[in-house]
Image (tube, rainbow, N blue to C red; front, side):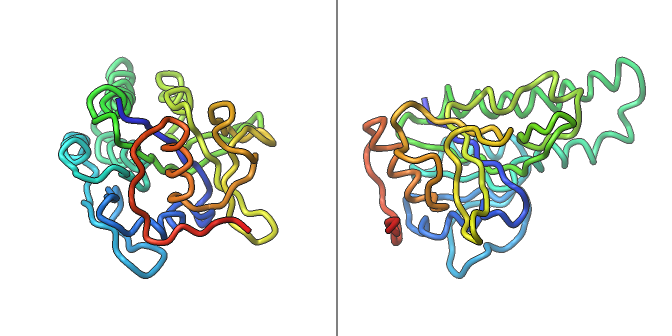
Length: 219
């Protein structure tokens, strides 16, 4: 099975910027939204919000590290296209069930169908609920009752800004969901660098190393 990794954060918190050192043939980027990268350079891949196309791309890709950027818009786009025609009563619940099923099936596909040596990074915006808990942003309680997004991942990293520096949190702090296996990361706060994260995960699970354009070690 491939390893899915969830990365959540506010807009501008550094989710996409963390890909800066992933500009090699060992990486592909799936853009759910058609927007440019926040740095100079290029990462080969595709732009689509179609679930079947995304699954096909992940399976057929030769890259070992694959990023689904703005993955939350898979949910949002499907909702915006269909909510006005969803009807009422049971039809509404059926509509939300379909949205939840599609996202759940995507993660199941990553875990059960994508090749073992691949790591799939799912980048999503965050939201804070009425109890102060920060989690991946979806479209409301009905969907959250169907799918606990964070529960489908062993590794969840939270993008934060600490003293004007972008960082990843590896364990839960201040109500924001973050988690990682025991001993994977030495520190609770690590560099906002997906190449660093990928290398660490591969070493932990004894996966084959891949190429990075320029890994910057934390000093």
